[in-house]
Image 1: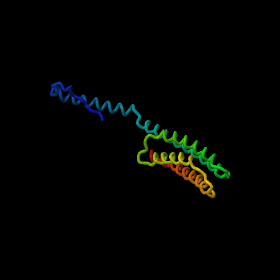
Image 2: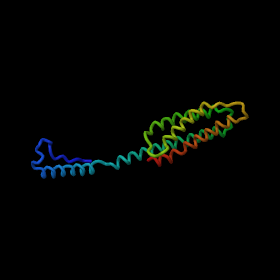
Image 3: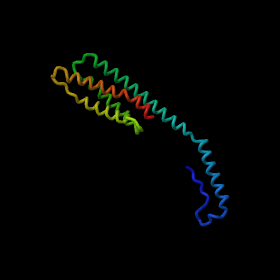
Length: 162
């Protein structure tokens, strides 16, 4: 918004009123024209979209690496969950970094998914295996799979958010 000022509020408002109003209107119009010609609003939008694309690409790479590590460990017939916990520990560390980069997400579940996934990753790192016929062992790997599936929603949420 541009306001055209045509008097000094000094009691001389009526003196050359029409001429001063025309000059103020011309100056305001010239300022708007100059701004539109020299300031690139599209560049700002383009830079934001580029940042989102880069974030999405980095997140997708993180997710593919996490899936590869997780699946290879899960399917290697491990005798304990220690290596799985280590994979999830590293994932939580990286996910916290991704979460810290998101300031707002208008109308999306992006922040909620990131926060919930991070909380679940932290909780599963405290998972205990009991002598229960393998149920608690299986529950660990099942919960890990579920968290990774939840994280897989993030690229599409990024598309919605931006």
